[in-house]
Image (cartoon, rainbow, N blue to C red):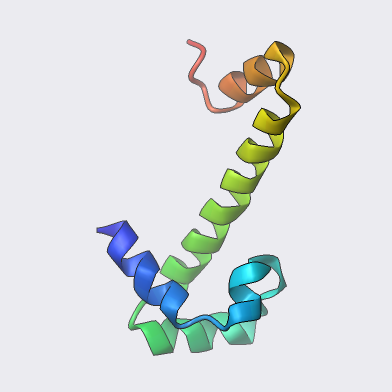
Length: 79
């Protein structure tokens, strides 16, 4: 399960990396992958998921129906 794997990956990160994952370098991704028993691809997918979630939260923070429509179109939920 992805959440279990993500838990191991996050446990391999340093505190400042958890607070600001966008600052994680390529060499650090390799170290995190090795330390967690995950692949580099899985670490990168977790970071990608974080960025996507951050975008969604930013759009929801706006609170206007227009922003919600934009988000639904972006994720193809409006069809």
